[in-house]
Image 1: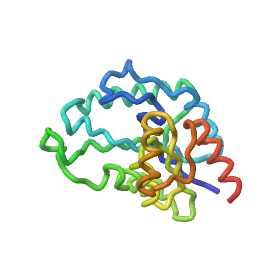
Image 2: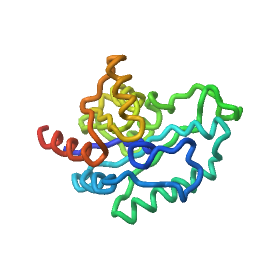
Image 3: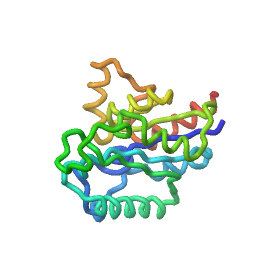
Amino acid sequence: MPGIVFLDRDGTLIQEQDYLSDPDRVILIPGAAEGLRLLAEQRLILCVVSNQAGIARGKITESQLEAVHDRFVSLFAEQGVTFDAIEYCPHHPEGSIDRYRQECGCRKPATGMAERILSRFSVPPSWSRWVVGDKMIDIEMGRRLGARTVLVSTGYGVEEAERCATCGILPNAYLSDIKEAASWIVAESVKK
């Protein structure tokens, strides 16, 4: 069955670094490319959705973010992985940059970034939807989309697993990393 996977960037696909602005500091999480290749082999649409509040907070510019994304895409391309879409949200309600200081419909756990991608690819409701991330907001977004969710223990995942349990917002699976998450998604897809 066709499907789409929404992937968090920082802490899920690349190592977590506060307000990453230097492309030379982009470091892939070990096994990430292998996991994504496995998903791509299943013809799943691979999409990155990333909150980038550093823009609203004045910690990173959009041009710096573009350079980081270029490096991110290039490193994965070298490993045989291509992303079908990348969306980011530059907003934060407590931002210091006026044009980005706002409540919006795209900042996770809101579904705006994912909804734009679903519309762009004309994804029908019958397709399977998956969300993989290292934070509770990723799991919340997935639930709002009617997606199956995976919390990974990389990045903030260990601390967030405790928060999820306390709040009662549980993922469908809690796994060690994106490579393990990809294997789980493939196995679950076969069951459908």
